[in-house]
Length: 102
Image 1 (cartoon, rainbow, N blue to C red):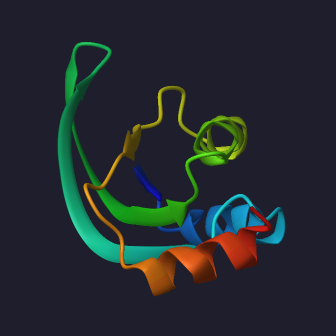
Image 2: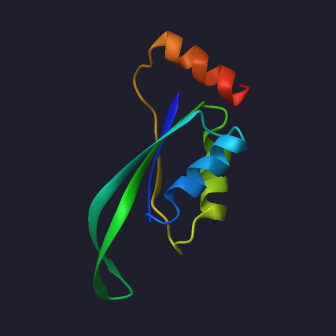
């Protein structure tokens, strides 16, 4: 199992998640709204309301899922971080393999 952590605008979160699900690159997406992000962009301090996306995929699909997310994302430099959990419940892993076709 791999977890892809990303942020995006509230207006595109569901669209991005649905697209990755339709393409069977992820098995699940959790969208956490109301995140207040502060960051520096082009020399200026920025403040934005964002959605945290927590998406689960398989080891074999992680690179393709991250690449596709990058292609679809509206940000110039999206935050896309792939995490490697130390463990995953075997039944959940089986389900994830099934829904992604892995």
